[in-house]
Image (cartoon, rainbow over all chains, first blue to last red; front, side):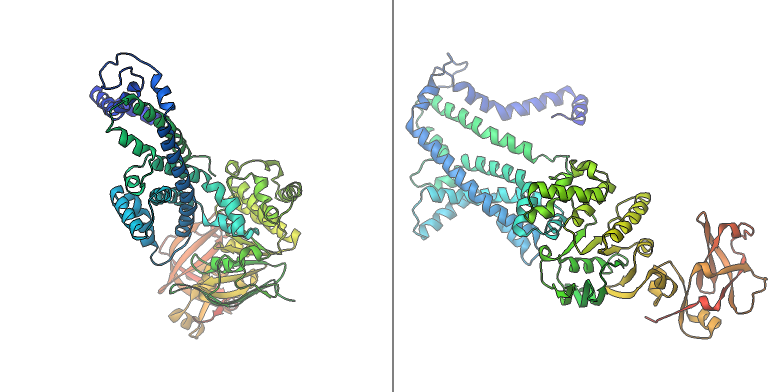
Length: 271
Length: 339
């Protein structure tokens, strides 16, 4: 929502600055629109411009492909399980680190947040090596574990940011009025962190859903949707199908990300 | 009678800092008891130990004769009014007040009835369905009070409850709090750094300093017979007379306190009646307070403050630097313990 201040800044900008701003946005978004456009083209090999004709046929073809459905289902299942694990462990960790003071707390926080700063390729190699050493066959659960490493961080960061804004006196007031730890969590803390959990969960889901680097190392023979894309690149047949799937994925991931953005915006209704 | 609250040799250490240092205290049932002291003196720590939010490093806490050291707050029959009110923002006023009964498993209709009853007591029943964010500071304060009273506690703990309110509202709430305490007949433990508040409301006051209790007494005793220089200065800002001046006036090495309103100001050549002590000094400053004015007079190394009723002071308006004579009855000098 453009604020008055933003509008004032826009009015002050020179023509050159305005053009530059739009050029920057175009640079970011044009490739996505290319994908959108060529999901409807009648030509299936090259990206000739303009497309010789438009058709919805590729949606029908994609719909009938069992390999796409299998990959989509696997990705949704992995993202769901990884998010569930992240919600549980990330919240527990956030509570432990937000509410207590102990030696090494800073170090633990750093170790906890590190996986998201670590390049995916390092995480992938490390996990693969660890799984091999442990004699664990790569498959569904190894993908889940790989994704959980960064999903936990997302949830942890969201929840701890919210917890730090909750005055300790709320918890004390609840206990003072007779509520034990569990009741206090349920009636006082959970309603306060609910939107943070929702936002963190959706971000974690979206990240897991399109993760490929860690997945390449931990998937074994399983094919998540991003891996399916990756493989399609080497088979230029029926290129519009890839675009159709990409458009669908964009639409699916856009919804939770927009919702998460709305929910985490600071609201001014708090007393 | 068993005291409602008893602290026996309680210390609380935060690292190397002694927030409370071997404090013993007994508060009778139905008493309005104030914990008074500057910030960091240990009064809030003391309150938190009684509430159970914190545990003593050594010593015991007893409620109605029962040792509750180590017992969590939700198993203690005390309730607290917090300085920041600590209202739950996602609940309406009535839901906030009904929180205690709710977590104790009271049914929805019954707990709403209980909550409305207490809201009636603090005259806020009309705002029952508002959100806390829609209330003024004074109204939030009343909700916090109602919420703490709904469980019918034997002891109510109040942590600087009026600290965030403006002066007029604060005075109004002081009267109301006192009335509610007398009506319900429950024990109030009231933390404040405002000596006026402690003196006007409490039956007894404990003065805290550096984690220790300096003196426990009725407001009147505290004012008339402060035991230490700290109490004399903190409660009602007394003059402390010591060293050379004390020796010259009384012939003793002790430290004395004298209240500003006990000091008469005279011209330097006016005679002093027999039985009165007097000394000469220079007027440094006069602070005007409406009904009274405070005169700061330098006597040797000390600056003594005298309070004069404005009507009496109006006749004489000496210039700064004028020579004056301060005089007071010998009995108004209060000998203090050395510390």
